[in-house]
Structure formats: structure tokens, C-alpha cells
Amino acid sequence: MKPHPQNVSEESREVLDDIRRLVQTIRLASRESEKSVGLSAAQLFVLHKLGEEKGLSINDLAKRTLTHQSSVSVIVQKLVEKNLISRARPSHDARKLELTLTKKGRSVIKKVPHTIQDRLLAALSKMKPAMRCQFATTLTAFLHSAGIKGRAPMMFDDVSFKKK
Image (spheres, rainbow, N blue to C red):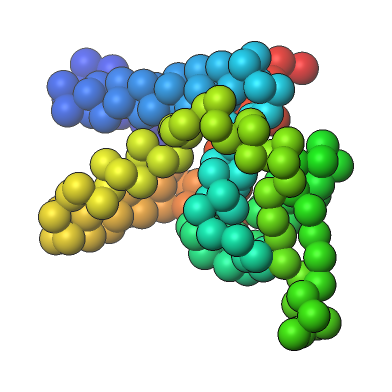
């Protein structure tokens, strides 16, 4: 049952406005990164995380980006195709595949210092643990109630925002 518009509280409007601001900021960040360096915000985020530490695996990178391995794998493939990341098997473990930035990849991350994901993670890390926990619990309940909690999370990427 949908609430009657006159019964919607001011807090509900504020929540929806904040969600709109967040989505708008992510869209603008992705458009800007696409315009300035030809990469989505998600691709830049992965490049930056890979630039912080050499020789990461896909799973390592997924942990550092707080994203599912399959989402990171798709982004990495695109970055390999653009010659921004290289993949190699280290001599000490032929089963493992290590990712490193290419010279071109290092050049790109110097041009664009911070991504929207970095800003969001920094804001979350500044929250007190109890507040962050409450925020996570509340957001999960909200998404569950809206019927979208079960969807697989993807990295912030401009693909979903492009006009068809």
C-alpha cells in the first residue's frame, strides 16, 4: 500500500533528496572521469587501489575495493584491454595471477587523484563505529523494505547511467 503524498514526512523527503544527491554525484563523477581521462569512476577506483600496492590478485583487489570479485574482474579486463594494467604469474607461485599498473596506468592515476568511492570510504571511516553500524543496519532495512536488497551489488560505474 502506497502512502498518500500528504502523509509523507519531511524526513522521508530528506532521505529521498539525499539519495538523489548521492546518485547525482556518482553520475557526475563518472561523466567527469570519462571526459577527462576516458575511464569510468569504477575503473579509476580500481586503478588507484592497484596503485597503492603492487602485485595484487583479483581477490586482493576485490577486498580493497570492498566489491565482489566478479565485478572487479570485469573492470580489470577492461583496464587490461586499455593497456593500463598488466597481468603476470609470479615466479614463486605459478597458480597466482598478479596485477600491476603499466606505465600508462600510473600516468592516468597521477592526473585524477581521488574518486567518489574514495570520498565515500573516507566519510564512512570518519563515522564512529556505532554510527556506521546503525547506518548499515538502517540502510539494509530500507533497501529490503523497498524490495531491492537482494540484488547483486555492482561497482559504481557509468555503464548503468549511460543514455540508451
